[in-house]
Amino acid sequence: MLEISHVTKVFNVGTVNEKVALNDFSLTLENGDFVTVIGGNGAGKSTMMNAIAGVWPVDAGTIKIDGTDITKLPEHKRAAFLGRVFQDPMTGTAATMGIEENLALAARRGNRRTLRAGIKASEREEYRELLKILGLGLEDRLTSKVGLLSGGQRQALTLLMATMKKPKLLLLDEHTAALDPKTAAKVLETTDLIVNRDHLTTLMITHNMRDAIAHGNRLIMLKDGKVILDIRGEEKKKLTVEDLLHKFEEASGEEFANDKAILG
Image 1: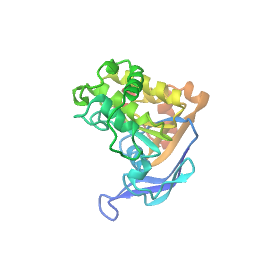
Image 2 (image 1 turned 180 degrees about the vertical axis):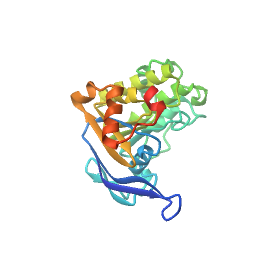
Image 3 (image 1 turned 30 degrees about the horizontal axis):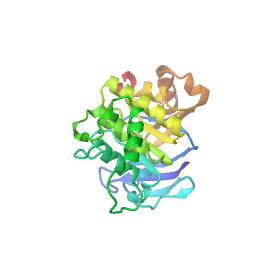
Image 4 (image 1 turned 90 degrees about the vertical axis):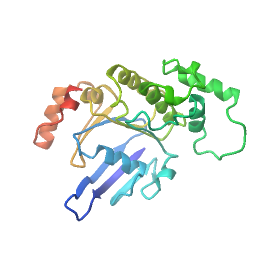
């Protein structure tokens, strides 16, 4: 479903601030893979996600989604393939619009715009049923402005909007990092439910090793713009934080220096 082949991205080329963010980076995801991604600051996690999303062009290599080469497609044309949830709960929704209006925008994504009246009763009922799975009571607040919601409620809504059209690839960019632990756990629970229900191929960046181990069927660790660990199947199910730290040290020859990731 996703095939990244020998991708390189260098920022500030030829200056003292030159940074190789992706270094001959390759990664393949099968249909339905739920891959958690960890790594220290500057490892290349967000750069990888932005390369897939088309935020800027890569310097070398190719990116394919479901067999289609999207390497040279502009960001807006990749939207047909992708769903994305960012770290900031304020991103991804329109604060001055109602919950149902935000959902309608997500439902119409990629469709031709017409002068038809807004939201039909049948659509409203569909949105109400969708919101019930969040368990946040939002199904009874369809006309509430999204700007009035808490960060956790807004992030859960963004997740719902990103997955409504069942994207070929779902990108979760530390989507629980700005939430308190209880709310983060609820959003992760909802993530598991939606990803498993719709069999969505998913990449989830997280700074929390425990979350990386607990979720998904596969875990990759990045360092210096490359994948240095790729753990899946039974090996991942039995993994502990201590095991992961040991594997990192073996693969990289150094200690993992991110207390936030270790302590969660």
